Image (cartoon, rainbow, N blue to C red; front, side, top):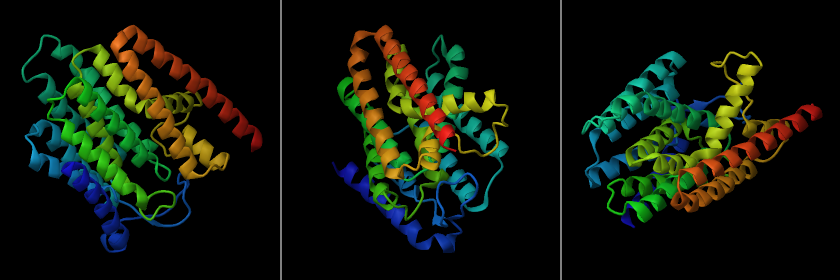
Amino acid sequence: MIVAIIGLCLGAGGAYFISRYAQLLGLVDVPNGRSSHCQPTPRGGGVGLLLALFFVVHRTSLPVHLWGPAAALALLSLYDDVFGLSARIKLICQFIAATLLVAGILFSPLAPDSLILFPICLLFVVGTTNFYNFMDGINGIAGLSGVVAFGMLAIFIGLNLPESRYFLVTIAIMAASAGFLPFNLPNAKVFMGDIGSVLLGFLFSAMVVSLSRDLADFLCLSSFLFLFYADGLSTLYIRWRDGEQLTRAHRRHLYQVLCNELGLAHWQISSGYALLQCFVAALMLIFYTQGPLWQIGWLLFCALIFLISGQKIRDYAAQRQ
């Protein structure tokens, strides 16, 4: 209980501090062609999430290969929020952090299939980190998804791994995400910034890799961020299909179409994503007890519904232009 309260306070305190002193710190987001906001807004409010992680490290014996790379990547992202970094440098640093994380998980102790799993886990961690960052484009979506994803991780641990030392991490990050939300939803007094979104994505993938004992675990845990993966992967395919340069900024995610082309309010889209994610995750927890085939079937069904619905929304938006 005390971890949740302190996490909530740190999340709120970090957001409040940045909202007051962003100008002095050089943490102001100026709108550009990709933005879904119109006014210069403080960013970097996710610093409270990093403080919550440090608090958990102080309270429990987390392995350094988990929190060290996560903290380093968050601080690098804070630097990026202030001064800016090239996409290439950020990607290289993400791969270095992910390599340290995955190596620490898979090679201590060394398992027979570690070398096979290493590249898969590495891509999963880097991919999740970037997808979470890409999806942080409207008010509330990153914070609400952090509450849902880490809340579901906490439920999974409580039901299946009650002695896990990672339980406090999920509770603290869930609470810190909730503490951040009042400053970002429905109207943004401050944005989370890369320090928050990159940290959430990296930590989530770290939890999935750390807690997965088999395929059933991995499918269940990764499904707690299903909507982000579905939106991110489908948008990547659409942009590749249309011959776009994938490293260029854009506004083609489904949530951006709902906001910019169809005019839905940020809180409506963010709440809708969070509620749908809760539904997908809750059913997955049920199918988890039935085995991987049920899990795969549920994920394929959800993916099909998302793709069909997403295409209809995009077609409707195009007709309105």
